[in-house]
Every structure is written in C-alpha cells, then in structure tokens.
Length: 240
Image (tube, rainbow, N blue to C red; front, side):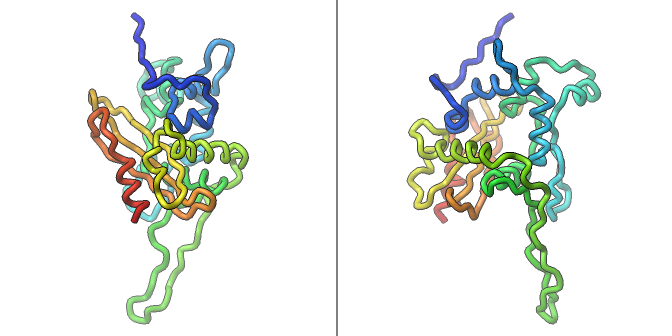
C-alpha cells in the first residue's frame, strides 16, 4: 500500500532560507531523514540539537506545573511504546510531527536564543521582589544563562535570515506581517494532533529584526483546516 502526501505547494529550487520562509516539508524531510545518496541527520542528532535548545526539558520558569515536553528517540519508543523506530518516525520528527511535545515557553525561549545570536536564557516572570512596607527591593531577579555559544553564530544567522524572508517574500508563510512599522522575522507552524481537518496554529515572531527586543509565541488550538489563526494575533500584539 502506497500513500502519497503532497506538499502544499511546488517550491522549486530551495535552500535553507527559502525552506524556512515557505515551511517546505520536503526540504526538512531530506535534511532530517535523508534521500537517495544524501544521508540525513538521523533521529539521534535531531534529538541532540533539540536538547541543546532545551526542548524535552523544563526551562525552570517561575511558574508551578511546568511540563518538560518530549523529544522522542528510538530508545524512548522501544522502552515506552514497545515498538521499533521506523524511518517514517525520523521524517515525522524532521518537521515537528509524531510524538514530539513542546510547550509555548520552550518555543519562545529557544527562538529568543536564535534572535540574540546564541544565548539561551532561563525565562522569568518576576523582575524583582519589593517589601510591601518599606517599598525597598528585597530581591532582584537577574538574567540567568542556561547555555551559550552552543551553535555557531553564522548558522543562527542563516535561520534568522530565513525567518525574515518568511515575512518579506510574497510566498513567505508570514507575509501578512510585512506591512508593520517595524521589521520582524517569523516562523509559523501547523501541528496536527489527531483530529481530522483541524490543527494547532503556531507562530513565533521576534522584532525589531536588526536588534531584537521582543519575542512572541502564539498558539491557537483546534483551528479548522484552511483558517489562518495565529498570525493575526501576533500582528495585533506587534501593532500595539
């Protein structure tokens, strides 16, 4: 039995930047799982790099009940599901499908490290603690680095440029943001979750592009197929 799943458009000759800009699944299938004579990264290397960006691990944000998510590996599947890891699992993982689980705060934190050139900070809600009577600062929450210089800056710059192209290119997945007063970069996501003709709509944006000050991750759940949900929300926030 052979199933054919067509990409949503014909992309033509595609490099990394264009693949990011247009969300080209086929490009990332090849990078992750390989094709013909090209050997892909494979599941273990994909997991290694996702772990470097702190996926599959708690960020340590000052909120209760944080989940660590899941970066699936062949060992995990054999242990937890009692099933072998198939090549298709690697292709799924290459585009963020399959058993992978990630929280919005993990996405925002990891993209912040792309925006700032390679410093992964621990996210915090509290800036400082002030004594209610004396009004003096009891404790200041200073920036805490989880990891830095774990990816070569020149590679992160390629990703940044691809995210910018997603906004500036007429065929980019986030072209709707191109008329904003400030230059932004973005990456969209459409996550399937087992319900036919519905998906979870994601977008992560950082701005201003040249010297980022803000990262926004928007997740809208249970979106009917064909509807655009997360991008207008991000645009409204950025306008404000």
